[in-house]
Amino acid sequence: MNPLAQRDSQPSSLPGWLLEQAAARPRAVALRHKRLGVWQERSWDALRVEVGALAGALSERGFRPGSTLTLLSNPRPEAVLLALAAQWLGGVAAVLDPRGETAAPDLLAGTPGRDFVFAEGLAEVERVRRAGLRPTFLVYVDPRGLAADPAPELLAYPALLASGGGRVPALLARPAAVAFVFLRRGSDGAVEEQGIAHADLLRQGLALVTGEGLTHREEAFAARAFAASGQARYLLAPWLAAGFCLNFPESLEPRDIDRRELGPTLVAGTVETWLRLANLVQDRLPAPGTWLRRCIDRGLDPHADGLSRLLGHWLVRRPLRDVLGFTRTRVPLIVGEPLPETSAQFFATLGIVVRNWTEAAEWKAQARPPRAAGPVEGAAPAFERRSLSSAPDVQPV
Image (cartoon, rainbow, N blue to C red; front, top):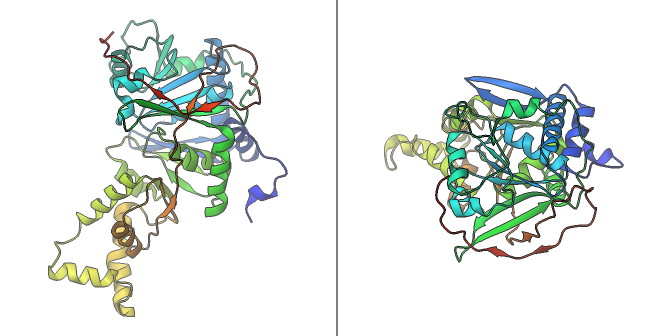
């Protein structure tokens, strides 16, 4: 039975679910991050403490309900925890992918969070500066090349974490408040913006938890920055609601090795993710038309005789799933655009039936909230379709 169905009431915000998991399973592993070749773990209670401390530190620096924190980072736990801290205070997280088009100067300059910025390391800090942003404070987590920078706005993540004075603010997140803002370039080249409220994220995330039968025993792999609404809907929200473990690779370059080592049960990606994985397998197969390739194709043929299928499972299908790190995967998901039929059939021959969860196609811009320090109201912010004109070129700071 789905444990979510047994609850009379449920948390109504992402940080609220963090507190729920910390109370219910404080010592369970919530997050795992590979660093220097070693998987480092954090419990749900440790996350509660860290996010609460970050919320206190942000509050001390003037972050208020309606404020926006911009995050420019590869997949890292610190980016997720800072987003939750901003949402704890009734604020918004604007997430940008440093390897995607959202890191372009005009898109970065269009972020609603210009005063509070998290940039992973030196490359991301330089991108922020080239975009002409002059944040009140600029937090980084990778000190290489930045530790000796005298810029007064720069602040290392550990220093921010320690600066809250031990005060944990009240939880101000409300279901109708916008949790995330995402940016993209529209078909006309203009910058478009999309805001998603806590209630919407949780409704779709809980639908995934129920529809796929997710439990706290899942192991999920986060190999993409949370810079698209599908990642927030179908990975971040289910993680908090179901209470499973979210795993981060050491970096993007060895992510395939890390995924193979981990063996996740839940994999959520875009069509680009799955096509890349298909190519990874195809590159390891013999050339079409060769004797060995014909043997492999027969072993993968679902209509072959029983002996061929049995040999195909142990000699072909299982090793190829191991190459992908899918030996334990039971919930393979694609978010947004579906796979081409040929690619879907290829994965199906490996016993991987990729299921499609749609991503909202319409982009809507959130009316910029005021910077007032009052409590967050329960009324939903107005949404309207809008394009932000591209910012002019700016000189590096």
